[in-house]
Picture (cartoon, rainbow, N blue to C red):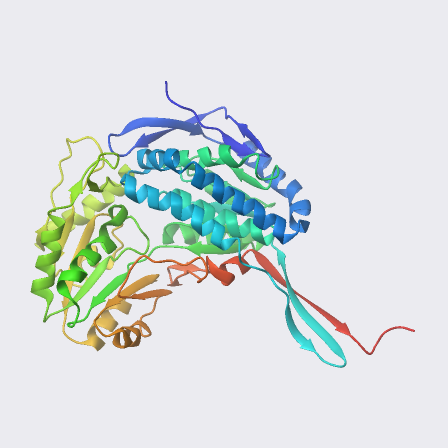
Length: 475
């Protein structure tokens, strides 16, 4: 019998009148069912969040902090169950699923330590002016399928710390682990403060348009982000958008080939390449291109592609058929144009599961679709460059600006180049590191606003300035 999971609305786990099947991408079999929430159920969740807001917003921040830390502890205490569930619905190997579950617990606990202190603007003989941060209100959170647990808690934790209540919608492809977490926290969080409801893609626009939702925080594609921004404009909802990226890595000629090859591989192929900040374009200086590209290809041949629940799997399946078909389309376009493959390129459509072999391309042109578009799958193009000015221009020639990296034996040179890249985050000699205390957000069409850090927390607040005239007190 298929396990059915329920929505969290106003402190209760509630079933729905209709259900959605959730597939295991490793074998395309149904691994669970979740509610297909209607507009009426969304209204119920929003009403619960609205009713809970006045009391929660006035709850002392230390008490709000303690609730977040209890959520973190519940996730950590049940990590063994949760990471296995996550692998089954998302596809990522067990070790990477563990990383997401423990990472979500750690990140939320760390974010809970942030503060919303008043800022003194003026304190003179005649006037005291201060800025305080007040919560926006009811938040609508929309979460993607690549990191469903991490993305959920990085919306829940700052929203709650700021004094907001939230209605969270997981992706219909990966809602199960989040609903299991909802069961674990329903008695930790006051009723109505956190509501988690699932539904198909029609539910998202209803959240964006809902008149009693004050802010939208969304992680997903740039195309969907534009629609959310348009929908939110009707009543000037506040928005935070963490969108797509076509992230460039630049490898300078002094880089250690043996050491960098493995790191570059995992910067692209962790989570089967389904990471918004994965290295999606790798530029290698011509002096070391042949040696490094051969080393990466050789490393790739020893990485197992398969079911994430099987021991030894390094790269799991693509999470859903829509994305699987898109990656196949991009690879086929490369074949049609005669581009050279160092590794992979062929898939077996008769094997159950959404498997794409690790695919590495050898120096495709800059206007190739696999270079110009975000592939979001286990496909990596390697390109040659000859000068710093040239590679910086090529890296910046994108509508996206989410993240990037520079690899070099000279960190000062790495920083010099990093400061010229048009992205929100740049790593020097590492990749995929995000701090709960540093803002994360995109430039250009990679997003709007920030997550994490003090800036991310402030996204859930309004500034309110209170000014007192000291020498004008009525008699």
